[in-house]
Image: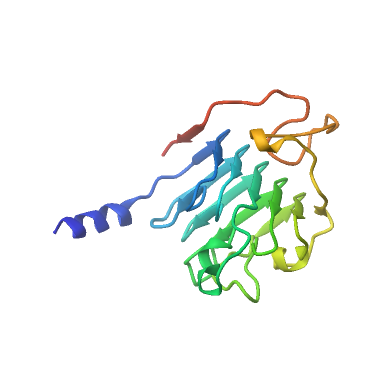
Length: 203
């Protein structure tokens, strides 16, 4: 009976207009965020730093997920057994086999190892294929970026090694980044690190 009630509560979750921003996470196993059971719409995930073990954002039956200006680092699990590839090495994922989750991914900075997969591809059937991608920067610490991305690089995107201020201390600001309106990653160039973690939701 208790299990049935729990299942009903999960299925009934329908919060919308969610904004998750200015959070920092390090060495978390299980991913940064999951919006999996329900029908939430209009989720904005921006200006977060996620240096975690596996996954970043997972969702199912969610419409209009905006993922922008995040710094995502996945280098803590370089050796993954074949049977554990999903979900440990799938940065974005969905259990929605219809493939109609709406991910829009822009101006993020991704640093990964070659075992990771950012998008749905030939060897990651349960990943996602973003509806739109724009202005992202990617880097693999041990090569294989074409395989890691899983889809062709777009003209507005780049593959380049970032120069962080002090990643060992959790400072993922970029060194010498010029002031620019359309910067990549979580931190506006030249600004101090923020400290608060925030989430806002409104019906």
